[in-house]
Image 1 (cartoon, rainbow, N blue to C red):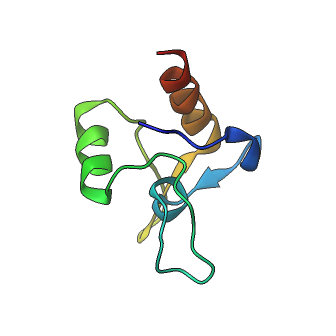
Image 2 (image 1 turned 120 degrees about the vertical axis):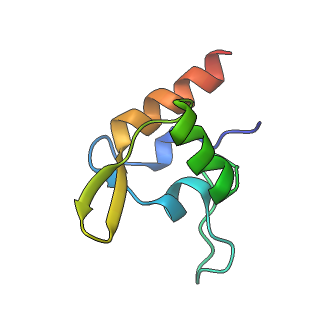
Length: 78
């Protein structure tokens, strides 16, 4: 699984799902940090393979940048 460079994301903060799995229909297109589908991502969250999200509001879910960096680093070490 090719993983994008983590140099393109901030050191702290939050990422929404399209910033993680990408969105080719956005203008401009958002390249994926982790190239999996949304349903695969959510299945991985449920199974514990991917980090748990943080609820920022009633309709806003995000992931900590630090957790995504750690995940990408774990893929690169494997």
